[in-house]
Amino acid sequence: MLAVLFPAVCLCCQRLADCDSFDLGLCDTCRSRLRPLGRGGCSACGRPLAAVPLPDGFLCGDCRRRTPAIDRFVAGWSFEPPFDRVVHGLKYGRLDFLGTQLARGLWSRHGHQLEEVEVVIPVPLHWRRRLSRGYNQAEEIARPLARLLDRPLERAVRRVRATAPQIRLDRRHREGNVAGAFRVRGRSRLRGRHLLIVDDVATTGSTLEATARCLKTAGACWIVALVAGWTPMSSKQPKTPTNKDVFDRISTKKL
Ligand SMILES: [Zn+2]
Ligand SMILES: [Zn+2]
Image 1: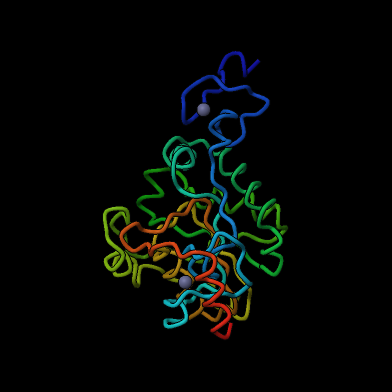
Image 2: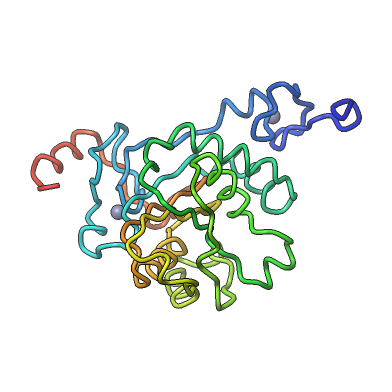
């Protein structure tokens, strides 16, 4: 009945979609264009390094030098059309069913990397933005994911400073923009725990890294950062090396 009154329209091409296959708000054609991300990147920051899966714990040069607070980075899909329309629908269209479907997709493909997680924590919005939007889109993904993992969801981090939208800034300014923007609630509960932090989209990963850093300072032991959509910043994206380059590097460096 509802399907007759409110026929499903694809978020990308706007054509009427077959209700039976209306996953992620996309028709079959648009959904087939999604690019799921594999394990060919740096384990801590996700930077793409190879077209084949890399050994667990493989780090890019930057992460070897700076020891990131994130221990493992997991991303669902490349943030490009049509996936950007899915995130847009979740973020601005109040289509909360998308959060559940994204969580299910992330869990079915990456759940095996999340087995050691003890607590699920959404990356927070500043209270003013949460109030104007009415919800936190990261939490719309984190909550159903926590249910699938059978782990508690905790709003353990709050954003104490409103920050400019990251999209307008370059990498260096993004890091400065979110530095000191987060505080941890209930520090004692997090000491020594394995945590999963969840966000909808990441580009440089500065927000995730700032969130992870304050959780590590509060005593967290291991942090996995999970994003639904991810794209590295184009200005900083290195020339993608060939698989031979990467294997040469692996064989000459101790992992
Ligand atoms: Zn479509
Ligand atoms: Zn890295």
